[in-house]
Amino acid sequence: MRHITFLGAASVALVAAMPALAQDGAIDKRVERLEKEMRAVQRSVFPGGSPTFFEGEIAPDNTPGERARSNAPVIDLTARVDALETQLQTLTGQTEQNAFQLRELEKQFTAYKTEMDKRFADPAAIATPANLGSVPTVRPPAATATVAAAPAKKPAATPKPAATTPNAARLALVKKVEIPATGNETKDAYDYGYRLWEAKLYPEAQVQLKQVVTKWPTSSQASFAQNLLGRAYLDEGKPSLAAVAFYNNYKDRPSGARAPHSLMYMGVALDKLGRKADACKAFRELEEVYGDKTPQDVRTDAAAAKTKAGC
Image (tube, rainbow, N blue to C red; front, side, top):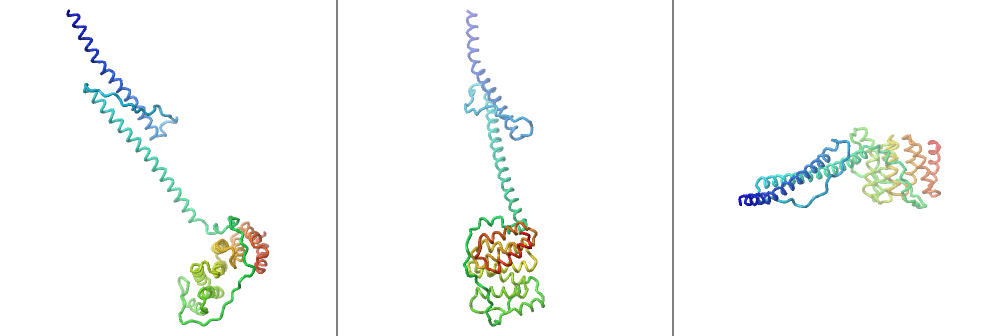
């Protein structure tokens, strides 16, 4: 009778211990999985730690682990494993966010560096006729307008000189230039710039001609003013700025009265910069775009400039 009672008690104890053993096995699996995930995260955060590229060791496991309901030590271990899983998820999310922010910073820095390189580039690089082929071929009008300075009375107002630091002698020279007053505001403004250029007051002429282009960009005088602006730079010994001014006039106003002149003078400015290949390309562009519509004086000057550049 005692033997039977002992066997019964042993069986009950064994049956009661089986859930606890199963729970311990589930916890061990979860801990082992956490260790593998932590190693994977460490390889991602510290990629130089090993020369070998590691693939993921495990697949995502959404099956919740079994929870012990009656054994206090097992419940405590389960809570700790849950906390580890939560911390691992947080660490993984932060790693992904940091990687994304780093990529965005690299993009912004690359864009900033490109913009700075453009700003510090040689201004003459803008004037290369490398992109002239993209400009539509527009035939200019057969008749080319000519500039004639109309006689005018000198107004009482004294013009402001364009020089940055004028002296008395410079102001006296500027005052000698008569300001046109025919009633045609656009033409008067251009003619005054022309007279300043003719008097070899190049800085003052440049300021006046820029005002004409800025204030009346679609006027017929804009082509004359932009071309003469390039001439003023060229005569002042600034071929880089001259090439830019000539190219802008040709690009923005290909059918303007002074577009052929600007294309020819751009070749002259590029030749002065030592860029003979680009200068020859500008002269070829003049022949291809305008052909027999090119004014005779421009043809003559272009032929002489081509010979000088060795085209």
